[in-house]
Image 1 (spheres, one colour):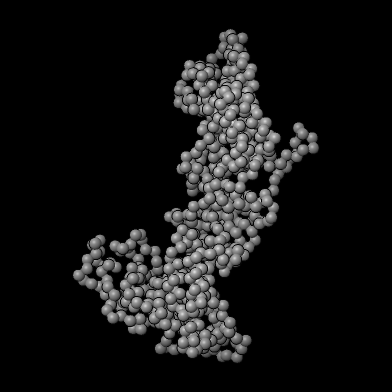
Image 2 (image 1 turned 180 degrees about the vertical axis):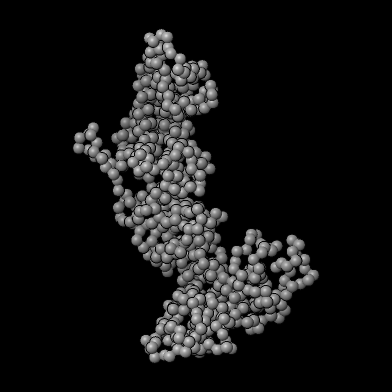
Length: 627
C-alpha cells in the first residue's frame, strides 16, 4: 500500500508514495518511522532493516553519481546481490498473489530475477520425477515382482514381519509378543512413525485385546493396510528392513558380485565406521557412525604390508575385502546398514535428508541421480517401465509426471523443514500453494549458489527511454562538459576556489564591508559532500568530480563571465539530470523523451559540435538498450 498526503500547492491533487524518489522515501523512514539509515556500507553479516535500507541508499548514491556510468564486474555482482537481499528482506512480510495483472506479473518476474536461488518450474518438475516418482515406481515394481516370484502377497509379508517392523520404529515400546530371546533392545530403531503408519492401521476391535504389557495401542491392534500408497521411503523401508526382500534386492543389484560392491564402496562404508579423515578424503567426513568396528571387520581385513602415504596407523587404504565373502553370510542388520549407506539407496537417502539443497545441487550436476536410476532399472523385469523411464531421463523431454501445482506443494513442504541456524540467512522468493512468499533459509557458507539471471529482458518502451537518457548523460553529456570544465577550470582556478573556501571558514572580521559583499556574490557555495569531492586531500583539488558538481561550477563561471547561453544550456542539462536521478518510476513517456532529446541536441551542439548530435539521433532508434 502507498501512503497519500494532500499537496497544498496543487489544489485537489493527492501526492502518493509512488511520486517519491528513493532518497525522499528513505528520509521519511528515518524521520517518521525512526529507522536509522547510515551513509556507510554495513558489514555483510548485518541483516537488519536499517542495514538493508543503508545498502540501498549507498548503492543508489554510488550508481547515480558515477562519473563514467560503468561498474566493474565485481561491483556489479556485489551491488546486485546486496540490492536483491535488501529488497527481499523488506518484502519478507508480504505475500505476492499470482494474478493476471500485467504489472504484478512484471514485478514478480523481476523479484524472481534478483532472488539468489532461481527456481525453474520445469527443472523442479523433472527433479521430483527423477528423485521421487521414478524411484518409487521402480521400487514398487521390484516388490511386486518379488511377491510374484515367491507367490506371496504384500499383505502376507506385512503380517509376518509386523513384530520386527514394530520394534524398529523410532517410538517403539515393549509389547506382549516380546520374549527374553528377542528383547526390544536387539532391534535398531530406524523407521519413522509416518512410514509405519503408511503400512499399518489400528483395527476397530482395539478394546477386545487384553494386552499383558498394557501398551497403547497393543501390537495386536495393528493390521496391514489393504491399500498402500508407495512413496519412495515406504518402499525403501520394506526393502531395507525385511530380510528376504533385502537379500533378493542385493542379488539383483550386485550382479558382478557382493565383494565387488564392497570394494567399490569401501571408502563410503569406512566413514560410516570412522569419521576421521583418511588419505582418500578431500574434506572432513560428516556422515553418521552407523557401523561398529566389529561389523567392519566382518567385511574387511587389514593388510599389514600396506602402508598409508600419510603415515597413519589405521587408514581406509590398508583394508581389503575378505575373500569369498557372500551377502548370505552377513547378518541381516549389517546388510541393511550397508545398503542404507552405500549404493543407489544411499543417494536417495541423502535426497530425503535435505531435499531442497539436493535439488539446488542437481541443477548443476544431475549425474548422481541419473546413475541411481540406471542402477535401479537393472533390478526390475518390467521392460515397458524400463523403456519409459530410460527414454524419459535420457531424452530430457518437456513432458513430466509432476505438474506445476504439485511442484508448488513440494516447495511449500520442503521449505518448512528449513531451520535457520546461523546469522548468514539467505532471503529467497519461492512459489507455494498460496502465491509467492519471501522466506529466510539457512544457506551453508560453502554452498555454491546457482547462477541467477542478472539481466532484464522485459523492459517497456518507457523504461527503455529512461535508460537511453541515463546513457546519454554518462556517455555523451559528461565527456563534453568535462572538456569544457578542463578548459575553463585549470588548476589555478580550482586553487582559487580552495582559497576562497578556506577564507570563508576563518573568523577574521572583514574591514571593508562593501568588498566583502562583492566577494560573497562571486563565491562558489559548496555543500559538505561537494567540498570533500572537489578537495579530497588538503589543499589539492581533484578533477574527477561528478556531473552535478561540474555543472554547478560551470554555471557560476558562466554567470561571472556573462555567458548567458552557456548558463541557459547548463541549467537545462541540470534539470534533466535531476529529473533522471530523482525519478521514482524509472520511466519516460514518448513526449517527455523527445523533449529531453531536443534539449540534449541543443546543449551538445552548443558545447561539443554536431558530432554528438548525430550520435544522439542514432541512439534514439534503439528499441532495447539492454540487448
